[in-house]
Length: 512
Image 1 (cartoon, rainbow, N blue to C red):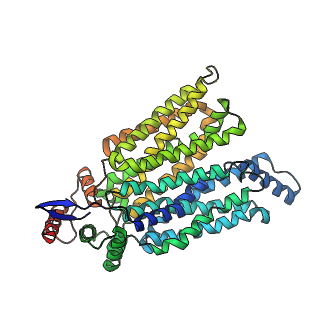
Image 2: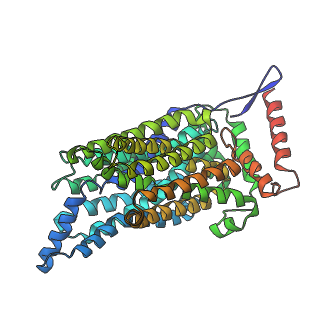
Image 3: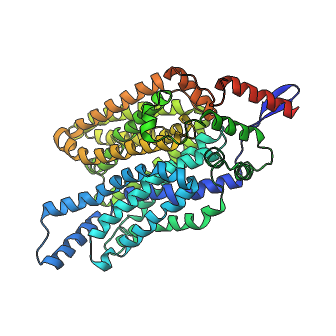
């Protein structure tokens, strides 16, 4: 990260993967991001047994069977309370990370996982289905916080040349969580009448692991230095993360970032919305997060079982095919981890949304001819898999990485709060609206998703720059031109570029 002198030429010292950085990444991603994915899919497979429990409990209370409309309403609440909780969790991001820190917020967040895990685990014994609905809301709060705080924490821990790869790890663990829920949901494992409560309660185990292990790892050095002014602790944390004593150049870059925003303090969401210097960054994260969720990814998963059934896949085999689709999702997300630093964020976003757009168009055609052309059903299956591949390499993992890189320290918590709120509201909207789209438009509903993918792709092509291998200040400077502002330090008239050049000169002299 720093600059050293070799034969009169500055040579950049690239950050490397150290044991501390790897373990902090794995523990925080498993303890938090894994749960997000797990709870997305955990109620899908055991839904018939859970609904039977709802009905049996109602019957025992009131000596009359539950009306189908009431059961549908209760089940809809069970499913939709999760994204609704996620929205409220996103609203808590900024105040918590500013007060407790990134690591502190993740540790505090485990309360919103362990408590609902116990509630869902004892629901059948307690003979109450209301506790499940409440627990789904609480665990949604956990997901809303973790989906924003983990990328922020890891983005601030990582050196700039590894920030993209490490930033995708949370999304990788989300996909692993989804796959784990799909595997455990197989009828012969836990997706049955006796295992579903245990399956719901298992979400507390990753939280316990994180609660026990994460305290031994560093807090974000940027948070410690820029927001708390604790340079001594920030230095020690940075040295542990980089595995070397010489971190002066990176620490100087953090000081420069702190100076450039000293007058701003912690930006609230309202202040963020009014900042001209952050206008296009804010619009970009809103468009990317809306595009990510409104592109139809949840609808594809929702529609997958009926596509497989129409293709002639046996009902007993569909659950295994669904697991296979989840495995493809995990594999492609792993691929994104390894290619993001070479391909760049922008290219992966463009390719991902382009693939999803084309897959939705082809899926619409295939579904319309599925009954009249026998082999078209296999095209439908292929379209689902291609869509999953496209979403896994770009739209799923990259928006959080770019959100981290587009904003400086003072604005980042509020930015993640906005991005997370848009993410979860869009998620909730798709879950609420898609059943009506499906009944009204049938396969043509995917044309709407295709259009959304296309619009998002065009916006990224025209507006979003490449942010890989750049400091937070450099990315901010790129947007300064589009926002038609000049970023200056708070104490003096030196521009950011001039100050950066001065810093590099000083570093070269020190190295000499």
